[in-house]
Length: 306
Image (cartoon, rainbow, N blue to C red):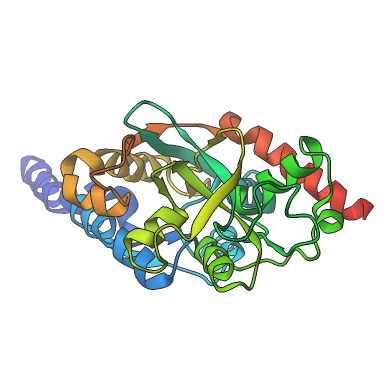
């Protein structure tokens, strides 16, 4: 009996590391999705430090998943093709609806001053003569993407409910540009008169970052409208993943800003003159985003009615 017990102990000890792997046995590769808010080269570059950090911290391969539009990432997580994605508030609501609640939000960004939100804005060329949404009547307005919170859902909702007009009736046309950068670039080029996009504050947003990157000249784009604050979108996991996996990956993302300060600065587009840069992440749950789910349902009803 003693020999059997000893052999059993040795066998268990040898198997110990394998048993300890837990969820890693089934998920040796983690894929995280990122939305198409900017050109693919820049979004891959910004997210590379996080990918490397997660790979080293978690001990599994980590891959970045991109798609040509927001819905591509929504469908990928709904089809179990990726494990986690960083969504905007509206695209989170889209994937929550598409999966019948089969996703779990865990983290969102928090700024240095404690804010966890940003603003939808409408921009135009500074030399266009358009200084308000009223001035833009009869002009071409570009929304970013049907699943964009700041680029479509929030500005559309506010235009109808707070500004008192229906975009399809107020503007000459309301095309989708495909991304925030494409919308801003279209305004610069004269393809669109105005466009919906977002900013965290007056020194940090889509068009400001495009100026920094040399994509557009400084002083060409001006803001003419700003929404109330929007809760930043969450890091979102499939609910059918192991709970311990969701927690470990969440904890790793949460630690990234302090464990790799320079990597987080690149990821968050940190600039020295930004008075309120992203400082890290804070925990969230679905209740934080239910109003966005409700707003998207309102938008669907509006479309059905028209």
